[in-house]
Image (tube, rainbow, N blue to C red; front, top):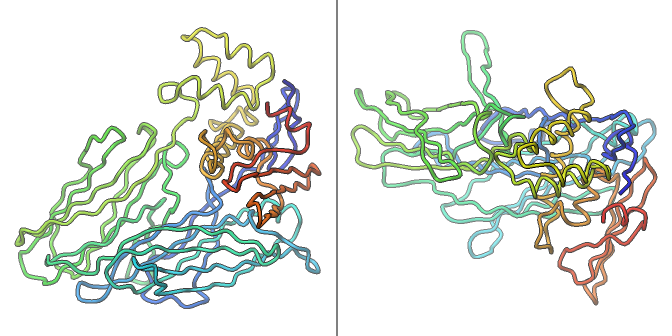
Length: 452
C-alpha cells in the first residue's frame, strides 16, 4: 500500500523519504484551587498541557470549608479550542463558545444550571488552527445529599453546533462520624505560593488523570474535616494503591495531630515504572478517639510506552502500525521471528524520530496520542476499538479537522458528517445509515483505498 506524504501542522501522513515535521500540542494545567464562591469572571482559566489530550474532560470534586458548613461541588471542564471554529474578524481570528452545565437529581429534575459565555482570539490562521492553550472552566454548586448527573453542553457559536456530555456523581454532606473527608483530586503537581510571611500549598488539577512515562508525577489532594478539636486527639489515614490485578499496596500510613478543623493532605509519587492499566487510589481515615472509619477512592490511568510488547500483544501493535507502515515494512513486521519483534518495532520508530538527539520520539508520541483519542471518541456503533473505525483511522492520519458539519435526516435518522481540512485542501465525508454512530467513509475514493 502507498502512504501519503506528511504535511505540516497537525497532519500525520507518512513518507519514508520525507522529513518529519510535527507540531505537538503543549499542555500546562493551571488554576488556583477551591474558592468559596466563584464570580462569573473567575469561571475559567487558560492553560495548556503536554501528553495525551482530548476534546473535553470532565471532573467533579466535593469539599467544604469546615465540618459544620454545607459542602460544595466543583465541576471542572477542560476544552480543547481546536474543536471550535475561528472566524476572521478585522485583524484577528475569533472563536466564540458557550458552556452550559445543568445538574439533575435522581428523579431527573433539574436543580441547578450555570451558563458561561467565552471567546478566544488568535492573531494568525496558523495560531487558530493549532491553538495551544486549552480552556479549563470551573463551576461551583451547593447541592443536597444524593445522586446527580451533570449535563454539559459546549456550543460553538460561530458554527452553530454543540456537543453534549454527561457525568454522574454523588454528594454526601454529612455522616454519623465525627470526622469527614473530601473527594480525592488528582493533579499534575503541587506548588507553594508565598505571600509575606505566609505560604500556601495548592495543586494544579488534572482532569484527564492519565499518568506514566509522559506525565510521571502523580499528585493527589484531599481534605479531612474534624468536628471537635481536642488536645491529644489524632487522626490516622492510609493511602493505598490498587493495581489492575486488584493487588493493594500501602503508600503512606500516618498519624497526624487534629489541631485544626480542616486538614489538607497532599501526597505524590512517580508512576513511570507502573504497568499500564487502570488504577485506584484508596484513602482510609479514622480518629484515635472514634471507632468510625471513612473511605474515599478515585481512579486514574497509567499510559506507558505504547510499543512495549511486555504490555501489548503483537497483533494489536500490527493493527496500529499498518496505518503508517510502507509495504516493505509491513511485510517485514508480519514475517519477523517472535524473539526479534521488539527490536524491529524499536527500529521502525527510531528512523521516524524527528529529533534523534533527544530521548523523546515526538512523532511516536503524537501518533499514539491520536490512537488513544480515536479509541476514546470513535467507538460508537462499532464493536471494534475506535481507531479501527473509518473516523478513527482518518483522525489518526489527518488529525483534527479544521471544521465539522453534520446533516441529519429526521425521517430515516441517517446522517452525513463532513470533515473539512484547509491544508491540504480536503473534504472527507462519512455516512451513518441507521443513526447508531457507525460512520462509514464514502469520499474521497483515494482515501478509502488508502485505509483498506
